[in-house]
Each structure stands twice: as C-alpha cells, then as structure tokens.
Image (tube, rainbow, N blue to C red; front, side, top):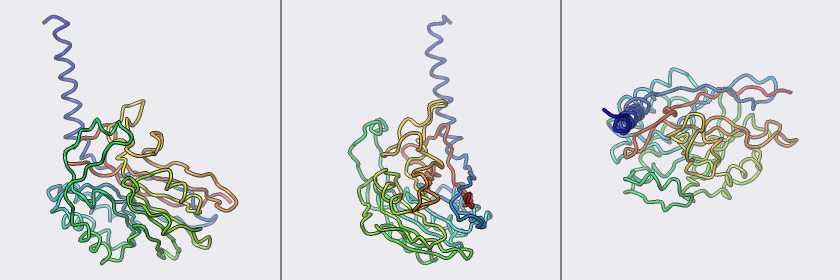
Amino acid sequence: MRWYTALPSAALLTGGAVTGYASLYERTRWTLRRVDVPVLAPGSAPLTVLHVSDLHMTAGQTGKQEWVAGLAALEPDLVVDTGDNLAGHDAVPATLRALDPLLDRPGAFVLASNDYYAPRPKNPLKYFKRNHERVHGDPLPWTDLRDGLLSRGWLDLTNQRGELVVGGRRIVFAGVDDSHLGLDRYDRVAGPADPAADIRIGLAHSPEPRVLDRFAADGYDLLLCGHTHGGQLRVPGFGALVTNCGIDRARVRWLHRWAAPSPGSPAGTWLHVSAGLGTSPYAPVRFACPPEATLLTLTAREA
C-alpha cells in the first residue's frame, strides 16, 4: 500500500476509535468528583452537598440509575439537583427510582428545558452559533417529576426562595427557572440574601452571567448550575469547544470564583458548574469529559 493511500485509512481508523471511545466507554464512565469550598464562617464544622445535574434519563439506562442511587452511601448533608433530568416520556418513574435513596436526605431542585420538552434530533454544528434557534420536542410529564420530589420534602426553587435547617445550620436558597430559555424571573427572588443565615446558596440550571451577577450582588455565597455538560467534547490542552450559554469556556465546569470577597460578602461568591451525568439520546458521546456528580464539602473560610 502506498503511503498516500494509507493516510485516509489511518484517519478513518483513528476517527472510528475515538468515536467508539466517546460513545461506548466514556459516556458511561460515571465519576464522582470531590471539592472543598471555603464559604462557612470561621470555626464552622464542614457541611457536605451532593450536586447532581443533567441526568437526561431514559427508562432503559439502568446502569446510570444504579450509580445515582448508590450515591446515597456518601450520606451527604444536602442534595441539590439543577435540572434536565428527563430524556423520554417514560423516564419519570426511572428517574424517581434512581433518586429515591437520596430523597431521604434534605434536598432542593430547579427544573429546566429537558424536564419540560423531549429531546429531538439537532444539527450539532448549530451550537457554534451563539444565538441559534431553539427547537423543542413534545412536552414531557414534568409535573409528575416535580410532585414526586416535593412529596419527599425537597424544595422547588424554580423562580422561588426557600430555606432548610441542615445539621443545625440554617441554609437560605433562591433559584430561577431555565435562563437559557429566558424562563428565569429573578425579580421574584431578588433582594439581599439573609446575612444571618449560615450559608446562602443560589440555583440556576444554565450559568448565564446576567443571572449569576444578580445572585452575587444579593450576597449569595455559592451558586450551583449545570447545563453545559462541561463542553461534552473537550480537546486536551484546549478545553471545551462550546459552552451553549453565556459562560466563558474557562468556567464551563467545576469550581471557580465568580465574585471576590467584600465587606458585605466576606466569602465572596463561588460558582460550581456540574459537567452533568447524561447526554441527549441523539448525541450520546463524551470525550475528555466523563459524566459526573460532585460532592462539595463546604468548609470554614479564613478569619
């Protein structure tokens, strides 16, 4: 075989190997990440928060369901779900079964587009266009999911405020609906977060800077988001190709500072963006970005 005829064959083999890795192995390489966040008052005992997002569950994904259920063994003090749980009309029972052991813990959630609408085939190149047209599938039974979570005592923070006492600590929350779809109504939750609370947490599915800035201005210590899938396809040495929202590529996943400490907000504002646990059924690939949940340990900040 001449070298110039071997090159296309080699390229095809390499491309096939990468595609196989991304679709058959990495997208089911469930990963637990652990990170410390120094947001509590000096001298405070730690508080653990399990952050799950973007399950994109289908009824047949039994491996994912078992892995999510197994997270209860971590015994987190608090569980937070930042939306996009569903990927099929029959997915609500499977999603609630997967979350069932975690529903015994204190929890809070917001909903998002893939709780409201079923996925449908899309041209992946459209994500490189900043203001691409959004096309929705048929409505999903999202109220069944919401009611199932509410029945177990979790807080629905979709354009709402709430609070919980967890391990003797008072946590105040605010959350918004999916800002990627323009469903957020921050004015409904606006106003300074209670400075007497032990921790102030904001929830938003999509980390849109215009929303994150308002949370930070109101004094929230920690913001939890999802939506980005961490880029889903990442190039080693470069990172995410796209974020699918207004967040910059450098903060498309994991923990970052959003606002610096100030006299009125001594912890500043930290942002955690989950890379999520699923994908659309029509784009079932991940590369250099495995599906994940995160156990955040909130620790005391320096005096």
